[in-house]
Length: 241
Image (cartoon, rainbow, N blue to C red; front, side):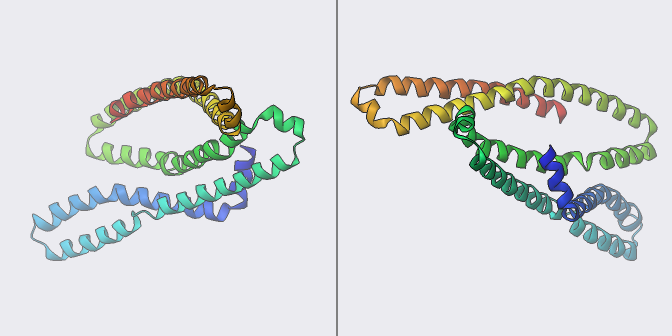
């Protein structure tokens, strides 16, 4: 988190641009239904050509605003963060003593610089694309719902509470599984590295079957944990929709 704060502060201009583009994308997405209703009610049904043209121009402008500019800026920001984090990890590994490096382990270092940093990049992208625009989406959608029908807003509040409870439950369950996945991924890297570097010794002593079983156990252990984690999220997605 310290490095993330430093990175966001050093690139505050790019962060501000990303947030503005994402907010513009949200506003555009929410305005399209309202403009479409105006086009139908005041333009098509009333036979008013000028309203149709004016509303069409507004919809075109909103569509340009709501295209993937925010997603592009988010991807660029997260990818640049991953690049800097990998550079910092490599630089730090060069300053470690041999004993310290052995305590961490080569397999763990490989996981940190590949899988973990890739997960951080995806997390940053999800935060900017889903969490940052969420308050604006909630506020504007509630206002628009109240204007349409007050009772519908009450239903909206109730379901928001249910979804927050569901999200808390899923995060609590998935946290332990995610940590377990990282441990098993380190184990896979360790087994594969030992099999590759010691292939001559393995062949000399005829331990191919043992090494295959050892690697298979590591793969199965990782696969079982990933399946449990994916099943948890597979249940959540349709419930949320």
